[in-house]
Amino acid sequence: MDKVRLSDGEYVRIEGPAMVEVLRGSLYLLGAQYETGAKVTILRARRVVAKAISDTELSLVLGPGGFADKPKAGEEMIDEWDSKLNISLKGSVVVVMGAMDSGKTTITTILVNKAASMGLKVGVVDADPGQNDLGPPTTITCSVLKSGRITHLSFMIPLRQVFIGSTNLEGNWHRAVYAVTKLVDYLRGREGADLIVVNTDGWVEGEGAIEYKRALVTAVKPSYVIVMRKGDEVDGLVKGLSQWNTLVLNAPPSMRVRDRNDRKIHRDMGYGRYLSPSRDLTLSLSQVNVVNMPITGRRLDERLARLISTYLKVKPIYVDALKNMVMVVSSSVKEPTLRSIPGGVALILQPNWENGLLVGLEDVDGFLVSLAVLRRIYYNAGKIVVTVPRRLSNAELASVRSIRVGSIRVNEQFEEVDKFSIIYRVERILSDAPFPSSQRS
Ligand SMILES: Nc1ncnc2c1ncn2[C@@H]1O[C@H](COP(=O)(O)OP(=O)(O)O)[C@@H](O)[C@H]1O
Ligand SMILES: [Mg+2]
Image 1 (cartoon, rainbow, N blue to C red):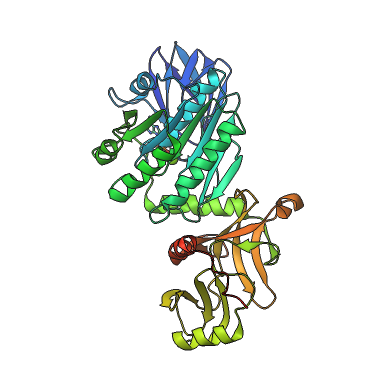
Image 2: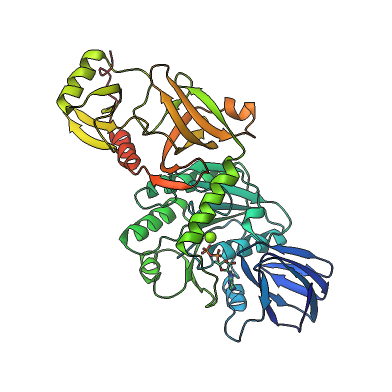
């Protein structure tokens, strides 16, 4: 155990895992104030900066990899952040943007603590489906804090989630706009949140990113957009958001950064933590429907199936159809393929295409009931076998109405191994198509 003495106004930087106890004095940490006797936990791989607001003594217990030091002059942003965050919180919606490791999660935590200390009910939407703090990867999750204070967003309890199906929003951001809007409405309408903070993903550079962020603020209509700035990476974004009330905050120069591998490990741990211990479950296509693929469990009329297969020159194992899309399962292809056919589109999939795909099990309102992993579809029996967390209750399982297929494949250890990116195109074709009435016999 180490003791740290701080004079009034002095900073200490702590990297977890660490347990901090205020032995004497008072500490300001992530928008909350801790007095003598208070204990705080800093998680592994998180770095926080605290400020003494009187002569203060701390006891520090550091875990493996944890450390503490004092930032040099000009290295710390607490005061700058605090003065810029002097905004009206009650009744506001704040969207936090910025590149990866720019401090979005930290700012979100600060806003949550500030509002909670004022007695406000705070809602958070975690819209960073790759590096989530609240839910598992591939989801957008909301939560509320009614009282107390937190040192990390992951200490909040997930309340409602929407399945996004990917950890990267490029090619899939319309779904994120839908999800964030739905959860903001939920927090405002159903939970009566006084402040809603939306934490976003780190995709900020380039036309696509700016288009997405503009669509997001247009849908959510925030009172403030906070943009975290490391360098010139957010200049285009800030320009693109010029009609909105934008606050630009500088990231501290000594930010802890995660590399690609760190990020993947973080996600893999996220899937594993969520899904294990697990069990297999059989769902019937007569009770749940697949919302974003032409899988109905009702084989397409024999004559039509033969006609389509001949046209495509493939030997079919199974043929199904939804709207203007036909799905053909066939050993003739090695990878998922889309081809146009008269009157529509054919999706040709290799046998076993489904094994390991992450899917969302959704309720009647489109909220996620549980993440699951697709194992096998028994076309003739109309059954789908999925791996789900063992903790799921019967009531939760009974609320499942539909399955949404995602774009990530995991192995038996729930580690990302492969992508099923064709799902975005399939989804788009299906959602654009009208529903013809005369397709099925
Ligand atoms: N003032 C600070 N000084 C140094 N590191 C910090 C500071 N604030 C936060 N960090 C650390 O920097 C990393 C990235 O911050 P985070 O808020 O998670 O960014 P983002 O959500 O944008 O990825 C985290 O490990 C966090 O603990
Ligand atoms: Mg974050």
